[in-house]
Amino acid sequence: MSQFDFIKDIAKFGLENDQERLLQVLNGLIEHSKKTKKINFALQLQSILKDAIANQQTNGLFKVGSQKHVLREENKEISEFIIEKLTSDYRFENLVCTDKVKTDLESFIEEHKASEVLRRYDLPISNKVLFHGPSGCGKTLASYVLAGELEKMMLVINLGAIVSSKLGETSKNLAKIFKKASDDGCIIFIDEFDTLGKVRDFSQDHGEMKRVVNTILQLFDYLPQDSIVIAATNHVEMIDEALLRRFDLKVQLDLPDSTHTKELIDKTLKTGLFELDKKQSLQKIINSCKGLSYYTIQKTLITALKRSLFKLNKNEVGIKAKIDSHLWASLIKKEKAEQGYLSKS
Ligand SMILES: Nc1ncnc2c1ncn2[C@@H]1O[C@H](COP(=O)(O)OP(=O)(O)O)[C@@H](O)[C@H]1O
Ligand SMILES: [Mg+2]
Image (tube, rainbow, N blue to C red):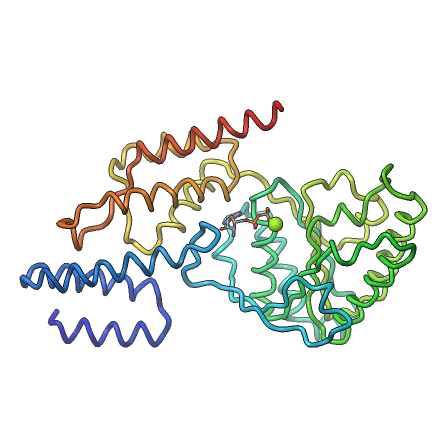
């Protein structure tokens, strides 16, 4: 390939927003420049790439390709109850999960895409989903995937603002948000749903808790079929039975097994810019991740990757950056030690 071919590909993939191939071509151009003795240019390009990758890590995680786009809520009356109003282009391939979870979510999406057929036969459309499971296993991510696959707007509810100490006020606030979702046919995402749907809470007026649960039951019943409620909780056992029964779909997102850990690592490294220094260490590292969440595993990998990158010798331009497997293993060990410490304390 000549330099012009590289430039043509860069223009093409850049304009098509194809990050993965753009990065591959840029890497190719670095190699090419090195071979043709344009070492300075190769170094500069390598440095631009490094910066871009560092910037792509928001919250410590890779955001290559998929994003959420934050919009503004103009309605002043409800804007304080909404943390974020967004659209997303997350897709199924962003979520690592069991086949059962995938099938459940796919059927849910299918129902909405084929809602006309169901309506013709007077069949109800599922529109209430509960994601439950330990922290960092993809509850929020799965809700972005649903919003992305369904191409619907999503309102992320601010429970802190909705829950009020004034009697009856929580129910009123909830009704306002549900009205908004009904009017716009969008998704409401309620994280930490156990805060609302608790069976009982001794620190609060029991009557008020009951009122809130009843309000939600009613709001659920009157929710139009093209609006969707997604709730998420780490404590499904805390939620009122009657409320649990109202969900059309309850999806458990659990800690990854070794196959899913491997899949997560592959997805995280999909830009092809990094590889493990010792390939034979991978299985051992995967085994050592047992008991950690997707989030934590990905975090250790990205930290290892960043630290390995900064250790990279300037002369090593063009070649894939090596992840120091020893360093990564020690980060995993540290996370597990912290987790053990936390669960004991
Ligand atoms: N099942 C998963 N598949 C792929 N990535 C995941 C998964 N679970 C978590 N992650 C990663 O960890 C981040 C945080 O996960 P999140 O969805 O917020 O977890 P939860 O809401 O269950 O606490 C995600 O943005 C993603 O980068
Ligand atoms: Mg979450």
